Length: 546
Image (cartoon, rainbow, N blue to C red; front, side, top):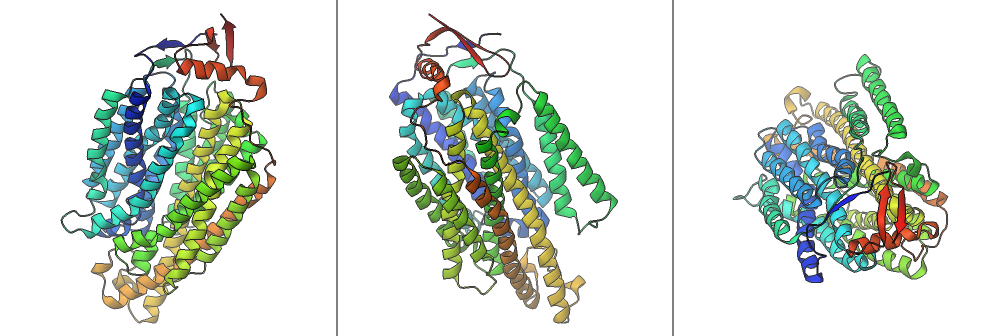
């Protein structure tokens, strides 16, 4: 056993300095979240300007999700070894380089590559901001700062689509500023953190980062996503390419499970994943992530290509879903705090989510916007009542020392579900749109090879008859993918029903590990309760009292 070494960089931070540092952390978290939401309504214009395809449209979103998902746990492990402040600054620089590269992209392929690199920085910021806040603020006081986090998330979620729409509709800015807009804000946050953030460096000796496990998981999922994107288009379902890619993905993921079972510090701890509540929460998060990310990312495309609205108008039209998320998360959170019960709200939210997606599954290019808005609001209510509460259910059942790993596992699989959902539903949408356009062009007596409607999202370059066929094809096909989202979300209902009905505990830690609370709280305050805290490779602690 080896004891952790603590390098004190400064005295404990005062409340004023904590708020100053928190402002920098929240600013950079806002920029990271904004980078995903700001392109949601702008992507049709961006891909159209770059003459990209529906598959490339999907991968602009998928690339960032994939790299952020794969790197988040690695950044968390690095925080156990190196200076947290330095890691946050490195993540900001990576994010900045990716943002600038995306803004200067000259083709859809270059944009996808830049977004993948940007996702590495996003993964670091998502992980490290939470780590830094936990290192700055004692657990007993951390609750009062949750409102700031919620406000930042709400602002980025609601404001991103509107900002993206305004940028692409402003002639003297253009779509490239969707990526440039976060650069000056991130630079300000970089310098603000340099001045205000002052954290001790806590290093656990013999910590091993599971690079092999993370690589195998990312590689296995990537191969599957690539296969999903190209099957039935570039090659047939029953082909040697399908056999090679699916077989390779299964082999890589099987090796990942084998590595994770034997790794000293696995990216996805299997002993936590096997616990009933955690396993069910992961299953529910996978379903919610696939349904929400996979469905919501195409709403901007539906409003612009399927209905002919501008990017700004598309951003305004997506507000009902964001309002549903905000209202339901606040109301459900207060009711859960008052009653201590969590399962009824998760079950209700999962049912509402399926109902909302089922309603969206009936839309076409002529559906009333009032009906579409109501359906989006209901989807938002379902998301707000399930997503964060699934994480809370897991945190309630694990010991304090395992909360980070358990929460990260749920977040990892939720992001993974979103990545798969975007890719799968994007592939389904592309195939259905292509078939519909080919059929309608033939019915109108227009040669499919000359119409060009199935290969580009640049509607301005199409003749008016073809443009109308493409709009109808996208508007009608979008309802089909929402039906698939509803079917996926049913898995979330099953997982929620199987959760144990428990009352949330009022203590920070489980009863049999209560002593760790004193260590954690006192350590943050700069007054350790024990002379020595030894941590072995599995994360177990041994303490010797003074």
